[in-house]
Each structure stands twice: as structure tokens, then as C-alpha cells.
Length: 254
Image 1 (cartoon, one colour):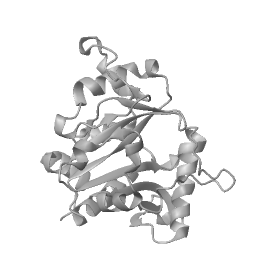
Image 2 (cartoon, helix red, strand yellow):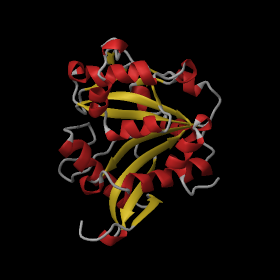
Image 3 (cartoon, helix red, strand yellow):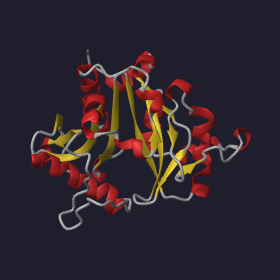
Image 4 (tube, one colour):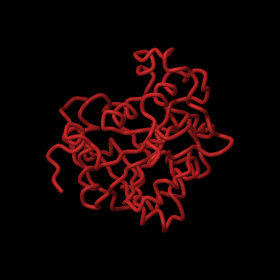
């Protein structure tokens, strides 16, 4: 990048905004990761699905690039999910423990950054926008699926086992992967784990959620259509430590 990025975060307001988000998702999830789906528009280069009209779309823009969309988060509150008929991740995970908790829920999904903006401040700015949204809507629990690239569990045995042994959600938050696509994450005994090696295989987004005090549900979900192995991450905003809150929401007040 030639100039220092000048970031701005906003919710998508127009169809043009939404198409820009879907175009970034296409570049990341389809072109980079090999994903696909029934509503993916290869001709127009858009990654989309039936849930898009129900979600809010949080956009990260770089005003040094004419306001180009360089980051995306898809947000679905429980009241929006009721209109959609379900949460997106209910196709992969049983969310009964969360839905029966009586607490305000919000699902996070389709988080991605343009390849030129990874490893820098971009994700932090996107998180600040997310924190403002969470505060505005009094959200208690954040959750959503995050992915490992590939569907061969044997190649992911170290990181999946590490997540199972060290970051499994307490029972009150422990969602569980569904049926035939359920992949047991307890593949290697805890004493045989190589933690440094395992952590190297964990995607940056999952590591970030763990630093914020996130947990994983029981079992991974093998998504052959998207060429991923998914884990469901759950964060209780009330149980975040002050240090974690500062990472996630610095300069954000309720």
C-alpha cells in the first residue's frame, strides 16, 4: 500500500454497500479458500446467501482508496434471527443452550479482510466498530463459526485437540456440532499435544477470539461446500477481563 490507510467503519446502507461486501467475501472465501454455495454468483464475483437480507453488514473502509471496502463482519441479533427463521450457524450447531439462556445473543459471521490489510491495524478498527454495535444493542453473548482451511481432520488433529482440551466452553455455553458432519476434536491426548505447533495452525481470527476469552463448542463441523472445518466460538461479554475488554473495545463507551 502506498499511503497509510485511513480507516472508517460503518454499517452497509445501500445495495451498493452490500455488493461491495459480497465482492470482498468472494475474493476471500471463494477465490482464496475454494468455497462455493447455491447463491454464489461467479459471473459477478459475489459470495452471498439467503441470510444476507437479515444481517447487518459492518464494513471497514479505507478512505485513502476512495472508501473501498477492505473488511467485513456480518452481524445477526436474536430479533433478526427470528425474522430469518434461524441463526445461520444453526445449520451446523445445536444452539439450544444459548437460545434458552434468556440473554441477548448476536451471531458473527463472514469476517474477512482484504489480503493487503492483514496483520496490521485493520482488524482492530473493525473490532472497535463491533464493540460500539454490541454496546448499542446490549448484547450479552457473541458467537459464530470460524474456519480452518481444508476438511481432513487428521491434518488438523493438533489444533483441534488443543482447542478441545484448553478452550472448551462451560456447559452453559457449550453448543454442539450436528450429526453426520460432527468431527470429534478430542483426537490427541492432552499430554501428547505440541502446543506451539498446534497454535501455528490456528487461524489468526480464532486466536484473536481466544485472547478475548472465547470458547469453542463441542465438536467441529466439516463443511465440504466451503472446503473448511468449522468450530463454533462463543464469548460472554460479561465475563471478559478488563484486559480483554481493552483489547476488544478500547475507547468505546456504553
